[in-house]
Length: 505
Ligand SMILES: Cc1ncc(COP(=O)(O)O)c(C=O)c1O
Image (cartoon, rainbow, N blue to C red; front, side, top):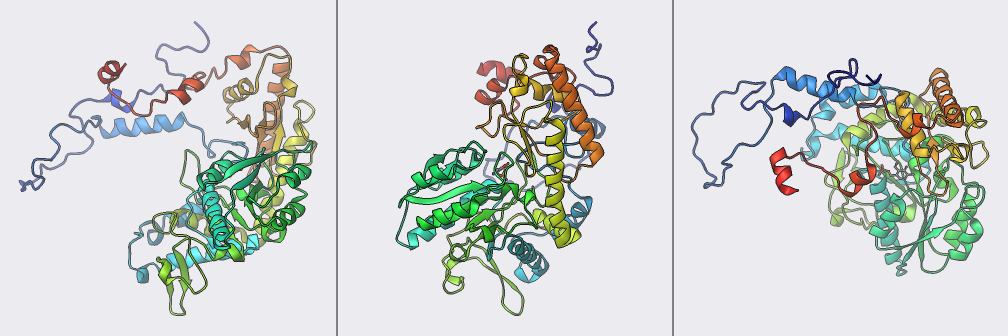
């Protein structure tokens, strides 16, 4: 018997779990519901005739099912989560407690405004903090994620240009950018023109100069960029783009490295989204929930989306229609139902207040310190494409794996066997076999040392010729290596009974 098999398929106390539908016992239920009293059917015969197809399980079966599934998962509460670019930091429990207060958690977005004065005041306070931290005069609070913030910022830029009578067609995006940048610009109708990076992993300013022209609407630059490096020519970039009549959009996903230390407005940035679910510690993963407020310059603030939250001297008011907007403003419309993610705002505000201005500054300092600690401690066994120091994330390439038969993907999968969530891999695209490690400030030295020791041991194993440890990994996870290409090309997104599945094939 192989050391990894058991009679049941279970692995010690990690219990193999079938789909909840496979556990169906028709008629079984966790609750006894009283039969409804006779009522007049007003659906004109359109009511459902068949069963709705929910699996029948008792309460203990349901509880066990979801607890077992949760144990098969890995989250920030399980251990260090170095997924670069994602800023997977600890979500303070204080934030959770406050977000669950019924006065926040049970609000309905259509409640009369007089009954949600506290919530509106809180949103305005978060906005005030963000203005102070970015040095920009206005914040659009409603975008639901970073990418949504990008779209909102670019819509404001497009509206501003149209109002200047100078509609333009091209957006410049460095080749190291996150994929959402070109996607957002394309969604706004712009053509994308990539700007190469230089040998230092920063934007190539000479190439930028060549690309600027009267049709350039904006540049989208990330700072620190996706290589974890500060764009040290950013002021020149801003001057060049402004000189050509364009706007400067900054992808603020990496604000964790700057918060409290640098005000993006001082760098000449016109618009920047802030991922509250990264810098301000609100939980994320699995596609949501998020919040991506956008900081806007004075000119762009004119076009900020609805709703606007204003204080009229007597209380907080929501401006929901362009006709009610303050004189001189021309809101670009509404980009989201209602007013934004209240739960995220509450958590972010709790985070801001509990850290204070000095605490937020220390966040950035500690995030940068931790990343540099990782970079330095691994640089002799792994290869870094750009010399340090770095900002909040440490970037490695696959140079140290050359000749071992182990790829970046294999290396990442072997980390799972060691109880580590892999770092981000193959991003940024400009680095061969990239491995992007973002420890964040919430990891202790002990936790970092544990991570570093494991990475060093893995690097040594790869170089020693133990390729099978990597190419067969993960061997100890609930599932072995999945066919990611098939999963991407032929995703199965809905469970169907076997008979239905077979009939469809
Ligand atoms: C650099 C960068 N830009 C933009 C985004 C998009 O943010 P969101 O996932 O909140 O839409 C991300 C997300 O990871 C990112 O890392």
